[in-house]
Image (cartoon, rainbow, N blue to C red; front, side):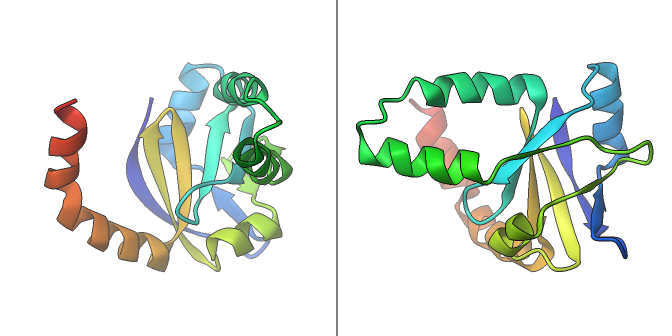
Length: 145
C-alpha cells in the first residue's frame, strides 16, 4: 500500500509533509486519519486508522500478566497520537516522538507496505548503510522458511 523513500524537512512550525504519493494512496483508500507512535530501531511508526485498529486489537489480546507484553504495550500505546494531515498533507509529530527518533529537521519517510516509518535523515543513512550489507543474507534467511 505505502511504498518508496522520500526526504522532507520539518517546516518552520515543526510540521512534516506526507509525500504526495502517500497522499494519493490515502485519498484512493479514503484514509484521512493516521496514528503515530514509537517504532522500532528508533523511528516513528505511522499507521492508517484501520490498520492501527487491527494492531490495537492484536496487542490488546496479549496477556497483561507477562512483563514483556506490559512493557511493549506501554511504550507503543503511551506514545501514540492520532494525526489528520491538512489539505497540503502537513501534520505535526509531537516533540516527544521527534526526540525519541532523533528527528531535528531533515527526515526520511518510507513506505513499508502497511505502515509508514519516519526517520531522522542521519539515522536512516546509518541504518540503511548497515542493513544493505546484510540484505541478501537476510533475504535468504527469511525467504527460505
